[in-house]
Length: 61
Image (cartoon, rainbow, N blue to C red):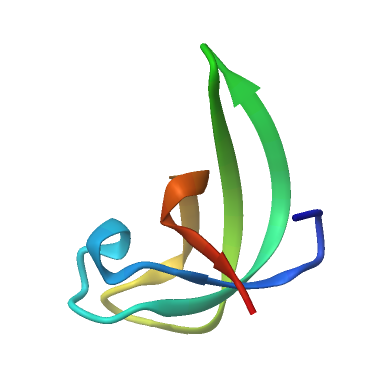
């Protein structure tokens, strides 16, 4: 997994009831957890433009 990769953020993480396709903007480690900042490819009013998620909620496409 690297910056620029196309990924899928789980529905559990988004809280929207559906997984969201996104592009990785930044990957960093904080207190032993890998955090991934993403921008959604098809944002809407509920989802916003993206977010920051723990890597276990990310699936590479």
